[in-house]
Length: 328
Image (tube, rainbow, N blue to C red; front, top):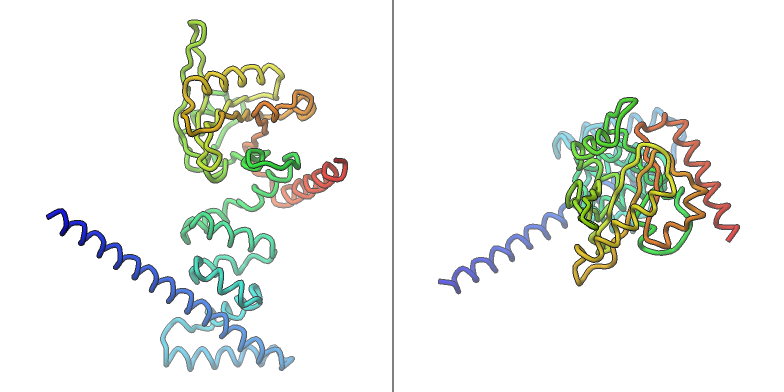
């Protein structure tokens, strides 16, 4: 009986693997076909300088192809195929991406004009295995801009730990009003925990809130505790509604030493801390050399700036990052 169950399990796995392989092959073939159609039409249209010629040829092709092959060849879709070839002119890159991205993924990327931005989302779709729905949400949330701004603000140092954090974290989805307290901030984060984890970045798993620690007979409470799979570390998060103060470092050091002694598993690396403040006080952070003690300090913003201001801040952060690099 057990042998039959094992055999059935193996055959099911073989069938599922084959179905997945066939689906990926069909998707890749369809995507590459659309790219080739777009290339062929673009080559034809480019040889003729009249814009009316392009419109006429697309209309004619759409009518003929729809009659023979169905609704997938509307004028709108044919223009998308042409744009697909323009946005992704390298066939080898398309072949690589089509192994993970569906045509629906590519359709979401076509309106993005910046090459770096398109490449970012394509890589994230592959590494994070984002669905079409998730991809649309992340593009609407401006994940690229958030990541760019956060990564550029960080000190340009090598190492897996520092590269796993951002500064600032943009928490506009919390809906906080003026005059909020630390407990309001924590409650809002827990209510929107999925969005908060997405803002933190990949690899974070939530463990608990208000982690109780008994030290010298006194109760201490850590705001939030996470685990980072890639780093294999506990990540302690403290929330501050004001600017960073030197005393925050001592508090976090105490929490990290307690976690290292009482919560760290044998296979894990030493715990690290993240202090989220309304203002980061960069000079104090630099003087205290926080990162040497495994403590990151970052600002959080409760509102996402308007597009023009956000682009300006990204530019300023890029200039500052380059200056830090050349000064080293």
